[in-house]
Image 1 (tube, rainbow over the protein chains, first blue to last red):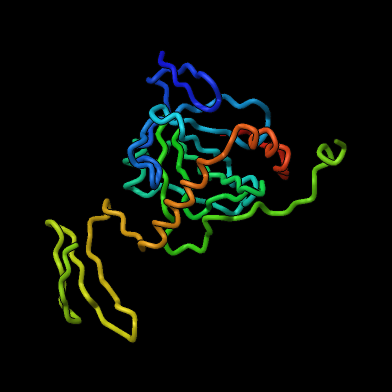
Image 2: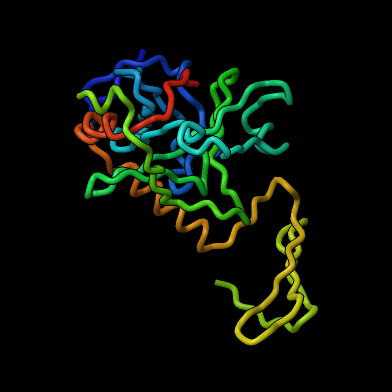
Length: 149
Length: 82
């Protein structure tokens, strides 16, 4: 076990179980190991903490919950990076940005492909697509549960 | 930075397997052809830089944001998380 002291406090983690990013995130190519933090509730957000740099943590979410038509899969080269075969599952995730005014956007232009079998992830750029790096969440009617609060 | 002058139809070879050709010019724009192995990702520089900047902005969140924001997400249906 190793310990990292970051903005969330002291976290113990097993280096063998970290999420590996063989190419890093764009702009953070040197950071290849992330700790997937346990979810604290049933919400759609979770976060990953860099095992190497305490200052770096990404908020991620499943974009298909908000954009059901958003379908992204790995190409051959990305499958090789993820170390998966054609029948292995691969989930698409989006990097969440919290802006100073507390609005939230998803980066749909550069999704993160995640392969649970190998615990690898790779951020890809959708060239030629019209997706934006700052896509606001769709405005949906509040759910009954939220309205009751 | 190495600066070379090329005419339309001329090219540049980078390493063994990346070939860049000036395909044509129109006004301010230059059309560039790129032959590279599929493993070499090719991106428009400004697109790449925009994503780099977005990632840098994305890591600036605070734990307090997390608590506030979960409630702002209105998911159409509770689904199983990957």
